[in-house]
Structures are given as C-alpha cells and as structure tokens.
Length: 369
Image (cartoon, rainbow, N blue to C red; front, side, top):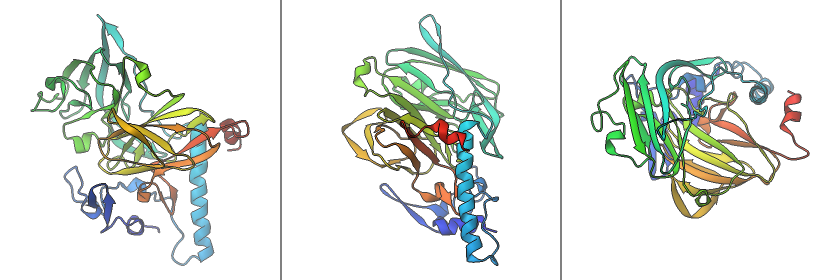
C-alpha cells in the first residue's frame, strides 16, 4: 500500500523546511487550523493522496511497479479529458451573479450556507459556500458604481464578509468587533459602498477564517476602470482561485481531474486573474509559453515582467496576459509538486492550457476519449 506518510516523506513535506519568498516555512509545524492536533506532515487532507491510486505491494516486481505508475497517470489524464466533455463532479462554483438595479444601486443577494461539495470524483467534503457555491458567485462592477450586498447567514455560527482589496468605508470592511458585530446565525447584514479602485479583488469570511475561508467562503470581485483603455486588451478571461488545506488543493473549488481546461485559440490574448485564498504559497507554472504580469493587487507593475512560473502568496492577486502562440496541450500546475503530482498521477492544483489551431481541436481530442 502506498501510504500517505510515505508520499509526504517522498515529497519532502514531513520534517521539511520549504523555501518561500522572504524565508522558509517549516511544513511539519503546520498545525490543524480547526484547533485539533497537527496533521501529519502539514494540513494536507487525505484526499490529496488518493488511496485508490497506489503502487503494488512490496513483493511486486519492478516492472509491475512502473507499469502501475504509468497506468495511474494515464487514467488521471483520461478522466480530466472526460471531465471536459461532461462534469465528473457535482456543483460548479464562480457562476457570475448579475446585479439588479434599485434606484441606481447595483444589488446582490448572498446566502452563506453549509454545502456538501464534491471536490474531485467521489470526494465530498463538508464545505461552506456563498449561494451554495465554492468559490462563491463572481461579482463585477465598475469604478464609480454604488453597490449593495445583502448577506444572509444560514450557518450554525457567526460570520462576516471582507471585501479584500477594495477601498471602502471602514464600517463596511467586514471584520467582526473591529468594524461590525458578527452576522449571527439566521441574521442578515447589508454592505453598501461606492466602488473607488479597479482590480482583481476578492470577497471572503473574516470570522473563524482559517476554517470558513478554507471551507469555501471566498469569491472573486472584479472591478473595471471607468476608462477601459486603462486596462490591457484581451480576447478571453480566466479567473483562477487557489485554495488549500481543509478542502484539499483546489483550483476554482475543484481538484484534478475535476478542474476545467483553459481552451483558447492560437493568436488570442488570454487574461489570467490569479487569486490565492489559501494558506500556502503556490508557484503556478505554465509549460510552453510565458506570462506577462502587469498588475498585482490591482496596482500596475511597471514595467510588466515575463515569467513561466508566477509565485502567488496567500491574499495576493496577479493579472497577466498569455499570448497564445504555441498550439498544443500545455500543463499548468503548482510547482510545489506535492500539491500537484505523486506516484498515483496528477491531483490538486493542475489544469491544462489548450491552444487550438486548424490541426488541433478540442472537439477532436474529446471524440477519442
């Protein structure tokens, strides 16, 4: 049996000090944020090392071993392609929520709910979501808009919503006992403010947040400038929200093979909005092409820089453009490899950028699966 502890040792997590920007973090000291005992090798849920994808018993021959590894890797990729045809899991997060207009104010209604969330095929976790989604609905506005968000708490504990990155009156900032009383079970709180700054921003709980955020109380709040010429032109947009620990390593609420491929056409300019809502660093690596990074937390990076691996610390947002020049299927994954791949194949923070041209069509690929 390929045990979880063996994987964590092989991945360098147990007893290891992992390098991060500005220093190191001792992974073995990563305590369970719910208050329980420290999780062996860090707060990495068991589903991140899939028990069904194991190497043969110790008596197996070397040939049986490598064949099993190959088979499991292939099965994961096939399942990823099948997921592109028809979802392998129930539930889809980040569904855009249109605002209704009341006397010139953009209004959204959010509920905060317990939800059974299928992270990857057959792995269902006790999550929490806005409008029963993980991540919650994507909200969009423009600088100058007046917005109102009515929040109903259906949990068995209090909560609040923080508008991460937005310049707003402090009484609307969503931090219990600093800016407001917590929203108690069954109660409603209304946030209202005028949008002042553009950028890729977030909404998330700021109450028991190591549990509530990491169980799914998070979402994207996209603010455009009044003058759209102030923002780079692009043909397609993808928002990629990373999370970790209590629901596992997830990209937009799902772990590979249930993550969605990013399908574009050759020659398109592709906008990626990165958001890290987790508690770990995730250097996201794109095969085949560079990313041009031009904003961090809604503020311009001057001059923009190019990279193929972008380190997104917790709480940060980065905007980048990919010029889709290279046709093919390009792996896109966290390069802390224990967040993305082991002997059983890919898992967690992995997707694929598919650049189509006249010779490579997603429909043709999926027809063969």
